[in-house]
Length: 514
Image 1 (cartoon, rainbow, N blue to C red):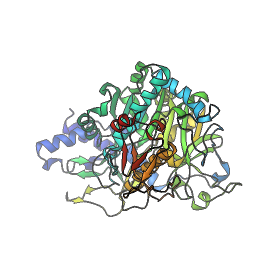
Image 2 (tube, one colour; image 1 turned 120 degrees about the horizontal axis):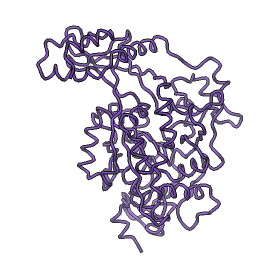
Image 3 (tube, rainbow, N blue to C red; image 1 turned 120 degrees about the vertical axis):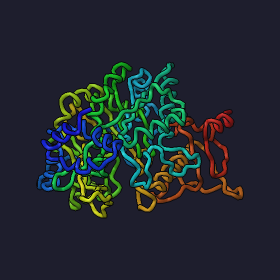
Image 4 (tube, rainbow, N blue to C red; image 1 turned 90 degrees about the vertical axis):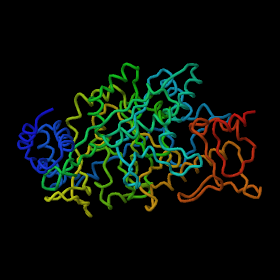
């Protein structure tokens, strides 16, 4: 470990010597911890990071005034299900001409060949949810009390089973989980406590993204405590450095993985290793793909998948003026309506090109935050308004480098309900996430022929279509271990009556098996 003198000299070169201003008064343990945190910070990189953050805050780079005329929407192919369409379900009514059915087979084929992995972006804490632990450990209040991590693990197990049954083989979908300094320990411990949700621990690979110092508006790294620099994950676009740092792509190559489904932890409806999405991207020869949903309203806080001068990219909602967001296409819908949901397909070859060639070209984005700090006397301060800058990269920043990018439109009610906020917020909270999943499962049960009874035994009216804020007539939860996307439920539910709440788990499915 470098000496305090060496670290001080390096900080002087970076213009950040203030980070050691309380070092002399620290006890040996906290002093060693601070020096250990500072040691990996290269002076040139630290100085450049702080200067760039202050400059970006002072002179934000926005889209040019003419940008609306340069954009054209990346519409899904004719193969993609459109808003309002009903995706095909497994069962006798399935038609081989159905595009969704036709796309599943090549997707399942790649999964059965062990060529597909999933990669979870899980570096953020649940701060906006009002909790101090990783979001994946959160329960939204389902009857089963399952967490986001458990739901996702069980979807992996189910898609492995479906692919294996279709292709007559055993297969594995490795699960790579990118964590941060804040989430790695709790996530690893949580998985151990739950026996990796019956996945093989060798196929669950956790790795850390880099951390960057938070910076004041005048370009000084922030001291959170006398013995600790305020650090933050480098955004979900830190994925590409983390892949190289931890030799993740080499691990994928050893396993034979060629296609990677990347997604964000907080979408309760996410379909991991979705064979329809995988099949679509593989058939189109794509090296990069994105799922999109139709924006619910002009000001919805999601980025928009667009083209700029023929190059695909995502424009963040904060970069779009209200006037532009409200623009309408000739058919009456929003002109810029392809909402990005942080759900991507990449080939391993493309990720290798990004890590080797393109990652240094990615430009960090500015996030202005309230960052706790110590004042000049060493007193802790929790600011009431934003006081610091966190520089982030986004996973979608690599879209312009794709040779063949495709966008794939999916139904919001089937695939997108993010968990961002506490229940005190109007949207994207535990209640809306829980309602979205239970409404989906209720629809699946009705389509499979189930009927639900009220507390006094009377049959409840069927409500297959609900308003966004509506509650289903019956509470029905279906385990991902029984059905991945609504397939195969007729065997258990056709013509049967159930009382609410009803949980169809593996044990219940066995009991209902004819």
